[in-house]
Length: 447
Image 1 (cartoon, helix red, strand yellow):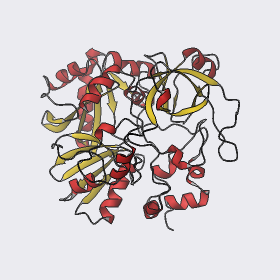
Image 2 (cartoon, one colour; image 1 turned 90 degrees about the horizontal axis):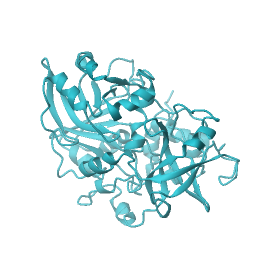
Image 3 (cartoon, one colour; image 1 turned 90 degrees about the vertical axis):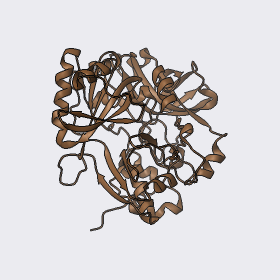
Image 4 (cartoon, one colour; image 1 turned 60 degrees about the vertical axis):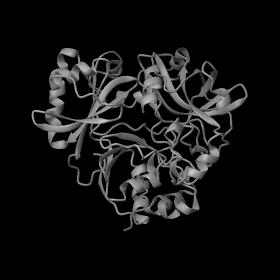
């Protein structure tokens, strides 16, 4: 029996939105990690005030691209600058369609002259592999799915541990017996513990300094235990699945935007290659914002804040569309700080709402109507309320602007997208994205 494709699912449902619309969808959480260790509030505070250890080993999808055409393939299908891409460096890789809409982003690390590792949500990997095979590039691909989807189970090929927070540097020195080599942001250095070799990627989240340590799975348990032992006197806190999903809201990264692949007739073959039960067919849409047209959910790299990553000095798929759109971007990314009293009343039914996370697209309105949509919302305990990453029409995106978030679940097709369904409104204030000042200044300057 043939495995159903994404196009099969669209045809059976009647449209891409009919396929993806799932009111009250449960938010994604990282696989094979406890929901909480010390409690999500303490875990969030750890990377703001102390030191936190995060295990990224199980939920990342990895794909290695090897061969003499590896750089050409990635440059032909990504907006990034490959003229200055050192071995040991990583970049946020941004592939787009010919219309200039994002497929999704991923973390691309250059491991050797003709070898790269692309990690993250697998939509970008699917895109690169399809075009590499269809285009006849001289490359090979090796994949390692996330632990929830690895055929036959088994361990990952790599471990990934993040050490974050104001005390991260002290923890690293305690673990390794001294400071690590001076390393630029998003570059890596070779390190070792008792003869076990791996790499340290200079990285951070929510504006806090830190490293991501990446190495062969055979060393995973030893390295993890070494961090726990060295971190004991510092109050090291392990971060569980709930808290792990939230720093992206503070750091301004919108995870898993809707890939712009569902409507272009020239991508029919691509949709027939994709499995229905992959990320493109199963990442749900929900919230108070509803449109029957999937293209209303597409986004451009400009809207996501990736404009400075676009390098027009080379030809790539979508280049002409991005050039044309450069000076006419309608929406921009902002942070919405939801009013704590309204959150308590609407989300918490008069009580402390506790932990809340959603990737729902909620309507954002002002006195004249719709001005944008939320993309991710989460409780940020150190801030004392919910924050939303949102895309707003530029004329309504000035920091300090007062708006309303419509809190509810549109039922989908058959109901007017503009119908007043009696959903409550939560007052919110527009703030910059990233919300964290250090992430907004230092990280964005050095990324």
